[in-house]
Image 1: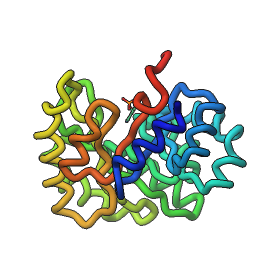
Image 2: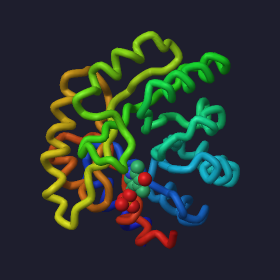
Image 3: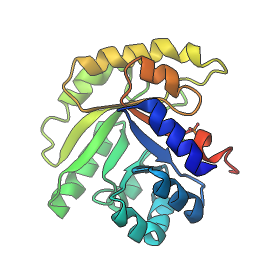
Length: 214
Ligand SMILES: *Cc1c(COP(=O)(O)O)cnc(C)c1O
C-alpha cells in the first residue's frame, strides 16, 4: 500500500521533489516508504525526529535519504536542530534565523534553510507576510552560516483545493524575484494545484500513509 502510493506519487510529480511527511508514523512505515523510493523525510517535531533518527540511521544512510524539518522551530530546540536536519524549511523570524546562524557558526557549518511565508496572511499560522519577504531576506544577508535555499508555505485549508490556487500563484511570483532552488508548497489536499502553479517540492503524508492517528 505505502509502496504503491510512493511510486504513484513519484511518477505523478515528475521532476519535483517529494518530501515524505512521517510525523506520527512508525519506523516500519517509514522504512517501507524509503525502500519504495522516498528520498526525503520530513518531520515537524525535533524530539520525535531525533528519536526516530536513531532507529532509522542505517536505512537513511543506505539510501542516502535527506531529513527535513517542516514544523515550527521553537528557539529552545534550535541547538538540537541545526546540523541535524539537512534543511530547516520553516524559518519565520529574524530572531530564529540569528539563532540558527549562531549555532551553525559554533558547529562551523552552513545550515540550509527555507523561509516560511504566511501566504494566506492567517493569524494562526507562522510565516513571514508575503509583502515582507524581500525585506526579511535582506535582513538575513549578514548571516554567513545560513544559506537560503528557497521559500515554503502552507496554503489556507479548504475542502476545495482549487481555492489554494491564487495563494500558490502569488508564492510563485514572489519566488521568481529571487534566484532560489526550492519552492516548497503543496500537501495531500492541494499538491496537484501547487505543482500546476510552479511548486518544485511537495510535502505529503496522508496520501501516502493514510489518516494520522494523532
Ligand atoms: C503534516 C504536514 C504536511 C503533510 O500534510 P498531509 O496533509 O498529511 O499531506 C506538510 N507540511 C507540513 C508543514 C506539515 O506539518
